Image (tube, rainbow, N blue to C red; front, top):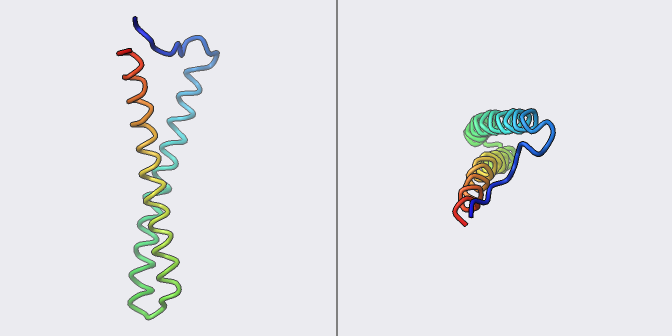
Length: 88
């Protein structure tokens, strides 16, 4: 038995895939930029003795890294589930 979702049954499926891909790209670009900005801010704040700002920058770095990981894991999870669906 071959089980696979019929993406052609949905009107505008190609546009939906394009939109989701663009949003994923946007999320990853923003997450990487936030990791860089938060890392630089953390380093500068620590070097200048502004520990409250350093704590906030460290939290921002972890949130941005988490968002990038979740975006990547989401794609991998969906691909895994689609592969499992074809082998049932």
